[in-house]
Length: 319
Image (cartoon, rainbow, N blue to C red; front, side):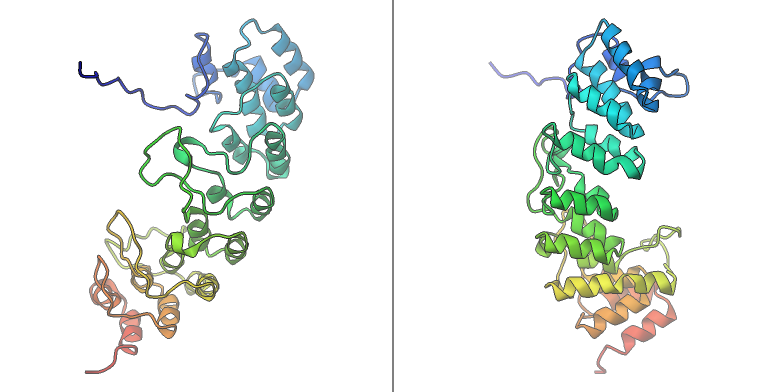
């Protein structure tokens, strides 16, 4: 007899916590919306009133995993260390998305909260859904980055590329953390990740730095010319230099399931980054090498500034 397909339910943030009471559905969405009034327990956990939290927890007739997690998640997101510790002590589960709550807490309490979770079995390499780990999200927070690496965070772990298993583990040859640090031009973060064993060959961090776009400007190189400030353009060069010093090839082609420019110099031309283009060309980048979107020269001829065209012309030998 042929097996019948099973109905699929859309995943939710905490669907790895069992629902054993009707109120659990609401508790797992622990942040009150515009039409939902916060409960006394929520307020006590949020404001750190430990004595009130203890009395309400004892009085709760349905002390389900969802209820216990509710208090923990609120406390973590509010930076209430004592309440979070109490919630864990009475059995609050650490779900896959629970550690992410800490990223909403005041920065002064984040490390203490991560240390608290570590005391209860969580590690920086514990995956969330689809294998996502937190390291790529915190790479530009140097205090957290140093703490994560000191506590064994593997810089080569990252989310599943094909989203094959919601409850599965991470990719072990990911470049997510290094690429994110490179995109932000965070030389210090890149240096720390490389020292911890991040592999450049896992991805295309040089391409991310070369093609970085300023977040304070509306820019889309696929539809129009991008013109970054000179300061932003030059800010990425030390990161690029560091990556090349550690083995990144200026002419390497990015391997991707998607249609991408493919070459760092093409990325830089598309980003309007004249200074980055000069740097790449000075270090051997080929302006005529073609990727999925053509060569650096091709793109410059279509949408590049006159300055960009002039720069490229200086590096193209006359026939």
